[in-house]
Length: 88
Image 1 (tube, rainbow, N blue to C red):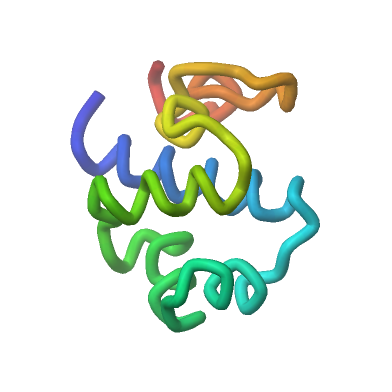
Image 2 (image 1 turned 60 degrees about the vertical axis):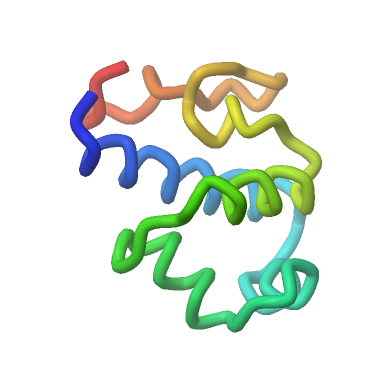
């Protein structure tokens, strides 16, 4: 998987996990102590998320980092395979 595909996959999975948790971007950003703009940039692939930030997002959403990386399914049914343009 290319770095750009992984960035896109992580962005999609953050968005889905946030929505599944019933959180707005504003609510999750507040929980993380970051600006809504930063979260928006991660979700729209305008900025890559760092490892420490990815761990913090996973913790805030109550999911594994592996879920956000598309390597594990915690019951939501969304992994790398669900995203047609992204090869697992």
